[in-house]
Length: 284
Image 1: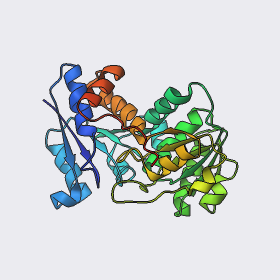
Image 2 (image 1 turned 45 degrees about the vertical axis):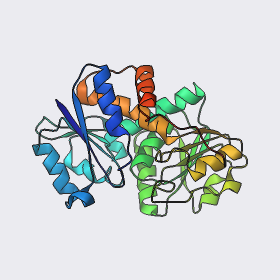
Image 3 (image 1 turned 90 degrees about the horizontal axis):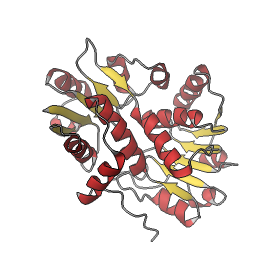
C-alpha cells in the first residue's frame, strides 16, 4: 500500500483522492489517499504534518493555505522551487522530507495544451500566494513579456517580484496598486486567490476589465465554472479552468510519489467515468 494524503483547508470536495487512486490502479499500484483538514481533526498544521511524517505516508500534497508555511520543514532539491518559496508536493523517507512544486509544471502543461507554443504575452494576476508564485515562475518559463501583480499584501508581492528577478527571469514584473491598474494592457488574466472557491464567493476581476482580453485562467477548480471564468467566457476570452492545473499537477505529483508515469488520456477518461471529470463551463 502506498499511503498518500492532502493537507489543506476547505478540501472536502477535492478530487485529488480520486485522481491518485485511479492513477495507482492504472499503474497496477495499491494507493490510498486521505484528505486531512487540520481544523476538522482538531489539530494544527504542524501536528498533522508531523503525524504524516511519522505515520507511514509515502508523501502528501499541500494546498491552501499551507504551501508557503511548509517550506521551512523541507529539503528542496530544485533551485527554482527554492526561489518560489512554495511547495505542494512532499516526499517522506529521507533525513528530512523533500519538497517539490508541481503547480508550476502543471500550469505550464495546461497552458501549452491550450495554446501550443504561443507566448502568454502581457498578463494580469490577482494574488501572490503559494499558487500565484508557482504560476508566476511558470509564466516566465513560457516566455511571458510582462506580469502585473495585484496583491493586497504588498510585501508578499514585492517578495515574489524579487524572487523572479533573482532567478534571472527576463519577464518584466510590476506591482499594481489596484486590480484595474494591473489589468491595463493585459491579454491574459489569472486568478490565484481563493475568490470563487466554495465558501469564498466573488471574482477578482470585475467583468468590464476583461473586455479586451484574450484568455483567462482560474486556479480555483471547486467549482470549475467560477464566476470569473463565466464572465471571461461571456466576454469572448478563451478560458482554462483550474481543473486543468489540478489534472496536470496531479500527474506530476503522482510521478514524484511512485516513480510511475500514468497515461494522461487514460487517467482523464477514468476520472470522467467516475464523475471526476471537468464540467462544461456554464454561462448562465
